[in-house]
Image (cartoon, rainbow, N blue to C red; front, top):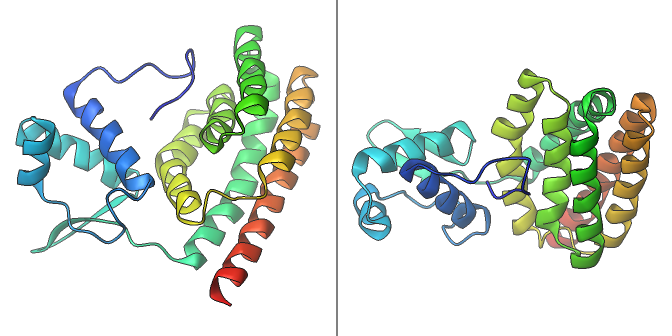
Length: 218
């Protein structure tokens, strides 16, 4: 996963490097949803051993980006609109809780890094940075089980959906303003307000996605 400096170290092992590359390829659609994973082809392409590749694919499976079927092998997960809306519903509750705990537990250095990231977001208008802002708050909550639920189970899958839908076009400006309000609550150490604002922020994103899906179907 590509994140800001200070939040997560750059992958160093061969398996981590391959995982990071494959993850990005799946999320952006370079490797299409539903496509079969060919271990010989990928091992040759990345110039790695089958063991390192299997390790990377195992991590993709843990992130719900790849599924394995008996006598069929591994393939990229197929997407559904219903699953996307379910993810946003779960995120509203879990990330709201994470924001509350982050307001209580993030140290000054972590808050400074998150503030710097927010300033980059306002200049770049990047949804990748948008994801990293959320990721930074989840890491800052200092709750390992909550981090696993959000980062391992939902984070990459959510990014995959967002790329598929055009990366939530039309929400970047308002989402950035909402991030600013959340950041203010974190700096004030106001956990209750941080949770309220985060839940409201994700709820608005979910409603926007619902509109995109309706327009897509019409």
